[in-house]
Image (cartoon, rainbow, N blue to C red; front, side, top):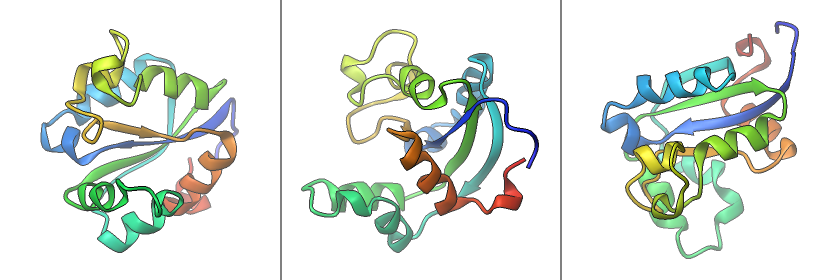
Length: 142
């Protein structure tokens, strides 16, 4: 892995944004905001993989809908680097509900609803490490 100059966080461009052809625009916004892409790939999660990734939400009422949605089409998984990456990525994403997200955020621009809100991001450095390791091996982080 190349020398790390900031902290890492994990992001997903969700199936709704991929389906809408917004990958390029979202990646441009990410890099224009000073993030370095340390790993990225287009994947199509199985239902089981989505359930494993979102296992923390297993008891929540939205779990089935969430895992069905996330396994319903391709998505882009990313390891992002920047000083204060977790906070910076969450700020760029915006509020979970696009209707409540600030202007200029990814969810405001590309999200349609709470369930289809274009992007996912880690909520802590610890979860970022876990989420990155769910999708990427050490050799894939460059």
